[in-house]
Length: 192
Ligand code: AMP
Image (tube, rainbow, N blue to C red; front, side, top):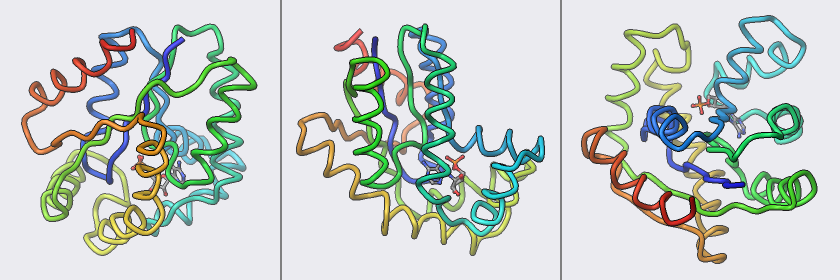
């Protein structure tokens, strides 16, 4: 079983790349952001609890996020592997993920692929994306900047966690989609 983590700030292209790569390598794409949006759309209890955090551009508390991830991992336990997009986003989530993968699958993260993009490009990309989506957190520049801020305050440290384990590969996320897919694929192929 392969576990690939796609890592980076909001707007770095994780979602786009995870979708392409999961099809290419026949891995299950798990996006915690998509799972939250699904729950919000269906007005579940989890969706109601998560909504106010998401709409303000804040991270949802770890307990809620992790519970949702556990359900999703168990539901897909027959899979060849996963591409995780948007989880872990805190050091505590990274530690929890290690424990979960060990307990549920007796496996561990193969590699964390981090995409780096300058803040001003992130903001532009997300505002552009908002033209074609209904995401409230994409439409307002101050909320976007808060999400980027949350990334630097709480999420960026996760890269050190994987660096210490020699599992971090850092890539330039500013090229075109095909170039970045090629660079990510090259890294994934080392583990498949
Ligand atoms: P995304 O689609 O990955 O940009 O996620 C959208 C929003 O969902 C984020 O801004 C957070 O509010 C929330 N979210 C997604 N994944 C997580 C996570 N792992 N931990 C906490 N909040 C999350």
